[in-house]
Amino acid sequence: MQTARIYQRPKNAMQSGKARTDTWQLEFEPGEAKRPDPLTGWAGSGDTRDQIRLFFPTCEAAVAYAEAQGLAYTVIPTPEKKLKLQSYADNFR
Image 1 (cartoon, rainbow, N blue to C red):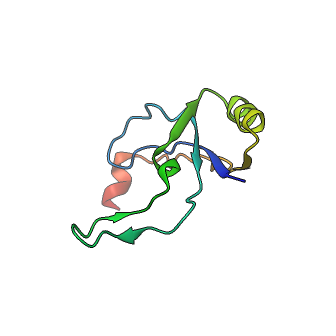
Image 2 (image 1 turned 30 degrees about the vertical axis):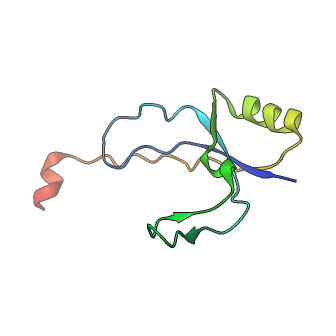
């Protein structure tokens, strides 16, 4: 039986925007370990489910899809977002 992870995408650390962080993502657990290709040295495996990522508007929609497909799934809760409010003058204290 295939297992999947369902989680909400985190904010990109390289940008200040929060685009596409409200969607939920379903991705499959790796079926086999990656191994280096003898010719190129790139890591790869025969498991093609590693390339599949499905996006859903809500967690409930992702869970409903996993249950309809008969997938075992794990929902990873979204970490709480904390704002660190400070004034510009605090940088010079």
